Image (cartoon, helix red, strand yellow):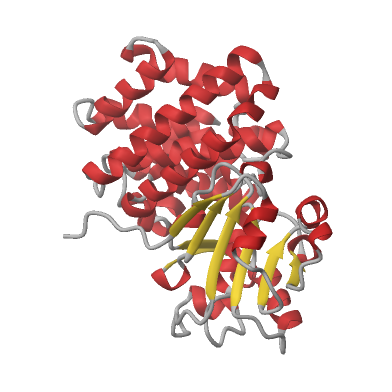
Length: 371
């Protein structure tokens, strides 16, 4: 039985220029990024790479339309390495671009194409939440089929993950909070997953403690306090990614997908809405297992009794980002049952990582409690 793997080499630099020099960026490199990152960090270096700006092809989360348009524009260009510099959208896109003979990304997501890695992949995350730089997962909206799909395969794992705190510095507080809360959710969900073990829980535990300490500092001293902890958040997010890359995430992510897919709520914000409500349901069904341990870690981090952990966690996270009722995003009450049924049918990849099984009625109850 496999306990743990990490195929990616993790690096850290203080500044982007140090990375560019160490990795000898050149004409055979494809850099997928965004203009607001290119201008301050890359432009002055006059790098001879092939650059592609993601926002030229659409805003929001990745889609098959976006990626296929990029592939079309890159036809005939030669490159040996793919370098992703951005958040979750850029990273998820870039993972597909290392595959051999890729012309339509839907073929990869549907596994109609042999998944053979033909290029080296280097990922520089610019948020502190996805952890995607060390996972084998890419998720995209497949507009041609009106659904979201995930691809999990070691062919799209990064060869190198590079943590550079200055790339996170310009992240507005709202986006910092959403991505950082997402990182916390990765660590907590991975901790209670049936696939967790001593190795994954070590990474989860360290990530939880680091993130909670940063959250407490921000709640006490204000949003600008986050700028003192950029390296800690980059490392903690990476550790959470290592944990969930091995142990998986569960119902929080599964229940959030309809909110993101139907109402285009950003991934981290969508997960945040379901976090404590899902764990309250878990705890009600089985309070004695790993959830008892992770609740203790969270309570210790906040200095509160374990019995108050979810209330205090909501208070702490609420100091970083408002938690809204689902109806505020446009969700309709008559959709609740359909969302619950859809999750149970389409998200088994995630639901198998639940701390305890959830029935369709229990999933519906969570939606209704948050509606």
